[in-house]
Length: 237
Picture 1 (tube, one colour):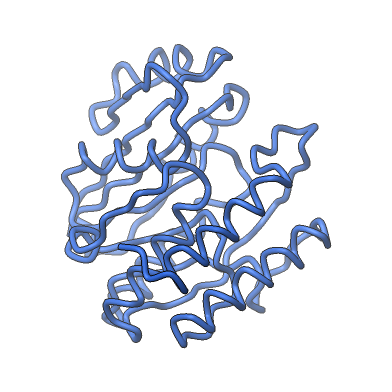
Picture 2: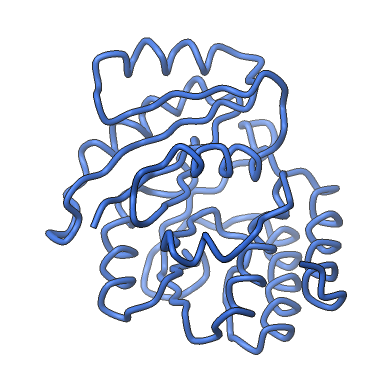
C-alpha cells in the first residue's frame, strides 16, 4: 500500500519545514510500502514556498506545487490529490496543531477495521492535550452534532484537519468546496455512500490563536454551517 501525504500550505514559513522533517522521521506500519509528500502552496504571501523549494530540492519523494492565486485549503487538497500516486491519501496541515506521530495509528486503524475513511478526533479520550478555545469547541460540537444527525453516525470531531481516505472512496466523491467547509462536505458525502465505512482515532492537538497564525476565523464557522446544511439537508451533490 502506497501513501500520499497532502500538505495544503499558506503562510507557515516558520513551521512547515518542521512538519516535513517529522513526516520523514516517521516509522510507518509494515504494510506501507512507500510514501510521498505533496505540498501545495496556496499563494502564500510570506516566504513559505521558497523555503520549501530550497529545503526539499534534493528529496526525491516530495513534490512542490503552487497556486497562482489564493483558492483555499480545500482547493489545495484537491490539487495535491490530482498529482498523487498513492492508494491512500492523508491530509496534513502545515502547522503543528496536529502531531504527525498520530499518523501510524490512523493507518493501522484503517487496515485493521477495513474502513476507507479515518477521521482524527481532538476530543476522544486517551490522549493528554492542552486546553483550547471553549467557543470554538462549542461551535465544532454543534457542527459535529448536526453532521452526525444527518448521516446517523456518531462523530466526535467533524472539523479535525486529519483525514485519511482511500483512493477508491475519494474517486466516488466530487468535492466542490474550496475552503474550510470541504471537510464537512467530505464526511457527509463519504458517509452517505456507506455509513459503517469510517473510524475515528484520538489525536494530539496543540491549539493556536489568531495571533499565532490561526487561519480559521469566526466567520468561517457560519460558512461551515451552511456547508453542513447544503450537503446534508438540501441534498446537494
